[in-house]
Image (cartoon, rainbow, N blue to C red; front, side, top):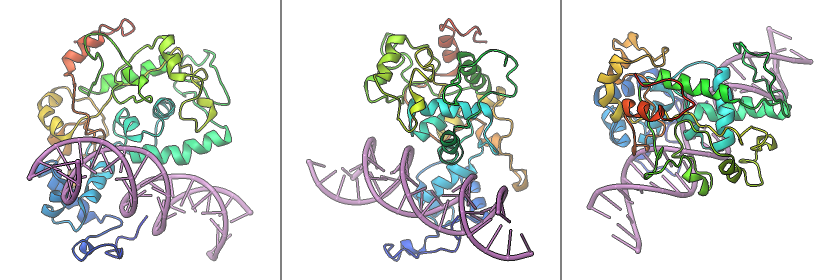
Length: 315
DNA sequence: AAGGAGATCAACCGCAGTGGC
DNA sequence: GGCCACTGCGGTTGATCTCCT
């Protein structure tokens, strides 16, 4: 951590900027920013920093909000499912932490990045990865363990994805059906850019083969060859959970009627307000740029019902 | 109990992308 | 087209915590 009183020590800073605080945030600063955000919502970060009476740069405020103050942040250790999901998503997306975070409700890119770089990387190094879920009731089912890593099976991913579905009343969907034809991964022709790959798909073997063309994904660890991960059968990305603040504000009404998302939502009763009442839960600052081609929940569920492997229907 | 080593994680930095003028 | 401000992202840093000897 950095010392909170490290102020203006950077010689590159001009006089104006040298007034800006750096380092750890004090509780008072947190409260200022939180109150401002809840009252005024998101806007230009430099204005926010100024108007909230913070001696911080906008960038710092943004980071603090996204990584710490955001109402919908989950706290605590990563669950096994989250772990598996991170590993799987990383095998597909590489170090695109923000995109991985967008698919993990309540988690930030920073958090996931730290988790990966400390815990997971170390585990891979030591080859001591254990992914068998303790609540995996059908653990009698044999699993393919390759190099100490258990690849995700379809039902695992389906469970994860359905968890996300059932816990979120709305989320972004981009390029699910670009143009008039169902083309889940047009981005595969473009450096594996999975930005638009939202939703749950079964990818034809031929397509998966294109993805894997000869080498492993983002080869930090050779174990992530497509075949090893079972990606020929299963190249699934859970739905994006991204949504901008503004969009969530617009959705508060809906969420208040259908809000079973993220039970451990931040609830700032000490400060006399309930954050989730202002934002609804399930708001994710990550991927704020993902604003195009979004689907409403009803439409989304209708569309999902067209996927034969989803045996639930839109209500 | 002390202190050294390694792990964790909040925060910073620099760069790229984007939009407005 | 160039410049500038702003935003978002990934990599990195470093203070603090935890464990081990």
